[in-house]
Image (cartoon, rainbow, N blue to C red):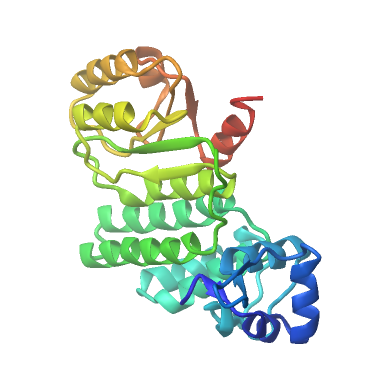
Length: 285
């Protein structure tokens, strides 16, 4: 799916005339650029932002690369929990994509999708595997579905503006969980940051090198697995000391408990994505 659309495509997708759509562009309702030949091109993320802000349903979502509306309409993430659990447990990518993209288009934030839907569903599937009620391949398949849907959502988010605050992060060595760190990236991007997850299973020395190379305003660590708690505490505190004073270190994840908070140094510790969103909104205010 192209990230740039013609006025005709956008008009078809939202059910207005092409001439009206061109007038919207000229009035600044929708962003656009011109090709060398002078033709208007509208960025996909600009169309998505407009539809979400105006709470409009596209009449032809397939033109925008969106799934068709779900047969079951959810107005709140909590309502979709059983349905998403069923879809992800069975490896149904299209069904999972439809539920999550539909809620996103209704204006539900990435933070809420992560906190109220994806995290509870994947936690429950993981617990079922630990109890022997689910095969390991089913748990891995569900994680794969989650990552594919998040990549779909990624292309719908607005591109960071020039001069946007920069954030990078990832998971520590031994922590292979990729969903959480990608959710942090998307949460920050939705808030206007230029955010990039460096991936999972990263040793502290390479993360420090990344911080020195990129010089972000914020560095996050998603901590879902710790192999050696004492070694980790020492490494994290050293990492925090080595970071430039201008870089805020934010930690979070299911392994972060009260004991770890007391033993480590950081700028902020966030229990969920909503708390992260509140923190970064005020970080430079």
